[in-house]
Image 1 (cartoon, rainbow, N blue to C red):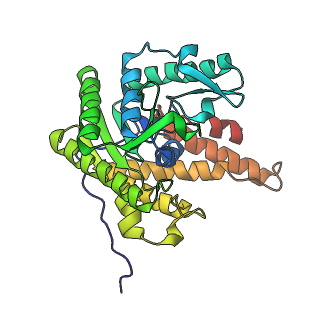
Image 2 (image 1 turned 90 degrees about the vertical axis):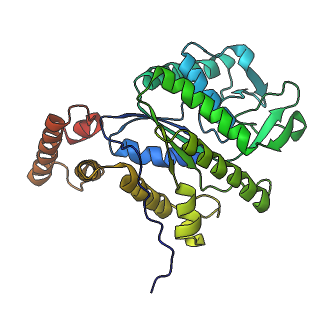
Length: 325
């Protein structure tokens, strides 16, 4: 008997391999997938602006990186409760001193500009179509930093607004980087601050916009149904974390498996298995590290790394080599 509805991995119109360079932008679910990509030694940069939830701010991130010289200044910051924040960044950049906030922001911006120039895969994960708009300037902010509600107006973007904003920035990026392919995803994380009904309406805007973007840019864009896998395939509160909002570790791993089925060739999945064995070995903590048996184990792992690096010189095993030495 079947006790769930199985959603098979849809075919993708492009693949992802270890020779590709990936940039990931968007919600916290972006970081979930990014963790597995980095663990599997893909050349990946994750959220250089921090977690960003709405599609307008995500598009603005891409556009600013594409321009390449749009560094932030102190005019882009504001102070609240002893910390300096940016409306374009997550609070992980916030510091007690404005110059420290700017340094953290601009260092990561510079690294992301360099990474994007060499990237050929862009993964965008949208969390919500509800945006907060600064009342004094009309700016849609990436993060409201828990400022009082009186500073904002709030509304839901339309399908047309999301579609046109993302198509515009994708086309601008492809004009400079014609080999770029884009993966669109809607985060399965629920945004319940405005209520369950509004969350569903918000997600529906994103889902319809993704469909329209894929229809208009069929060769450049692919939709990955992370939202549907949690909501319609797993479909049970045991696949949520204790807050009943975020997916559990098991759910994230399951969706990662579907990501592999969607975008990875058999050779890439086989390579992932070899990499995973080495990384798992690097997590081993021996009771007696000075024994001949453990030294033999270390040498065996170093030989495995050497063999992999001979086949795939671009894979970075610096941390694992240091551990086994």
